[in-house]
Image 1 (cartoon, chains in turn blue, red):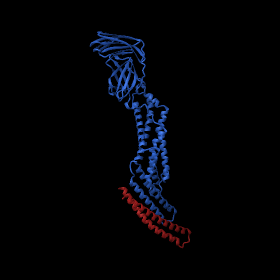
Image 2: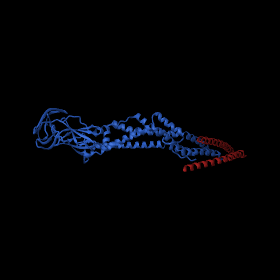
Image 3: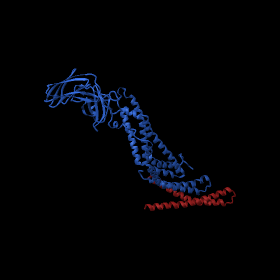
Image 4: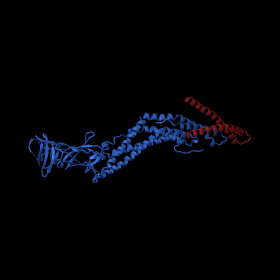
Length: 463
Length: 82
C-alpha cells in the first residue's frame, strides 16, 4: 500500500468502541426490567470488544493479505506491469485498426474488409474500456486502501450496529481485492497465453498508405520490372512488387501498393538482371502527392534510358535527348570509360548502333528470374556526344519470376486474425477470464464480510 | 478541525455516560432491592426486582473492568509514545 493508515479514523474507531461499551453498561444499569431493551446490553459490550480487536488487528490483516498474495506469486509490481502492457497492446491494436479504417476506399476494393475491421474495432474498444476500469479499480484499492480500511473500521465501531455491515464489507473489500489484484496476472497467465497480436508491429510503427507508383525511364514509362521497397531505417526489403506498363501492382488493392506512411523508403527497380536506384531517393512521405486518398509518386532513374517488355537500354552517361518512333534515337554524352548497354530476352531481337563508334564493344548473355537473353554494350574511349540508335522487336516475353511480397498484406493479416481460434482466445483472455475472476473476488468479499460480522445486505438497525 | 471536534464530542459523551451509569447503577440497585423486599405478593414483580438487581451488579462489574482496562491501555500507549 502506498500510504500508512489514516490515524484520524482509527482514533475515531477507538473512541467509538469505548463509547459503545459504556452505552452497553448504561443499558445494564437502567431501571427498566424489559428484555427487549436489556438484550442490547450484552450485544453492545460484545460489539465493542470485537471492534477493538479488529482495530488492533487491522494492519496485521492487511499484511496477511499481502503475504498470501506473495505466496501465490503475485505482487503490485507484477500486476502493474501486466495491466500496463495489456493496455498498450489493446491501444496499439486499436491504432492499427484506425489506420486501416482510414485507408481510402478505392473503387470498392475495401468495403468488405472495412466491415470486418469495424466489428473487430468495436470488440477491441470494449476490451479497452474494461481494462481501464480494472486499472482504475486497482488504483483505488492500492492508493486509497489504507484510508478505506480506516473508514471501514470506524463505521464498524459505531454503536447499535448502525453501520457495522457497511464497515465489515468495506474492510473485506479492501483485504480481498488487494490480494486479488496482485494475484490476477498469475491467474490469467496460467489459464491462457498471449501472442494474439503478431504481425501488426510494422504497420503500427511505420504507418500504412496506399501508393500509386509509376516508374519512368528517360524515354517514358517503362514496361515490366520488379520494384523493391527498402526501409531506410533498417535497410530491410519490406516489399517486392511487380511492375507492368510502368505501374506497380498492389497485392490486395487494385490501384495501390501498401507503403509505409511514416518512414522514408528507398525504391529500387530490377529488370533483366540490372538494378536501378530510383529517385526521389530517399522517398519521404512528403515526396508523394495525395490525391483522392491515394499517394501518387513518379519514380525514375537518369541512367535508365529505355525499357519495355523484354528490352532494357541503360548508360552511365548523360542522356541529352531521346525520341521514340518505332525505334529509339538518343543523344548521350559519354565520358571516357562510360558505356551504353542493352539487354534483351531470347524471344526479342535487338540492334544497338552508336556513332561515332570510337570505343569498344562487349557482348554476352545473362540469366535472371526465369528469363534469359543476351546483352550488347558500347564502351566509349573518348568523351563526347554519341548518337545512339536502338531497334528491337519482340515476340512473347515472360514475366520475371521472383518471390513477391506486400508490405502490409492487410487482408491476409485480418483474415488470420478473424480465424475462430484467435477471436475465441481474444474474448476469453480479455473478457471472460477477468470477469469471472472479479466475480469470484466479489463473492469472497461477501463471505469475509459476513465472517467479520456484517450481513450480506446493507441494513440500518435502530433499536 | 472537524475530526478533533468529533473526537472531543465522543469523549465528552463517553464521560457523561460513565457518570450517568455509575449513578444509575446505584439507583437501579436500590429500586431492585426495594421491589424485591416490598410486601407486594405478585411473583412477576419480585422477578423483575431480581433482574434489576442482577443487571445493576453486572453494570457495576463491567464499569469497573472497562475503566480499568481502558485506563491500562491509555497508560501503555502513553509510555510507548514517550
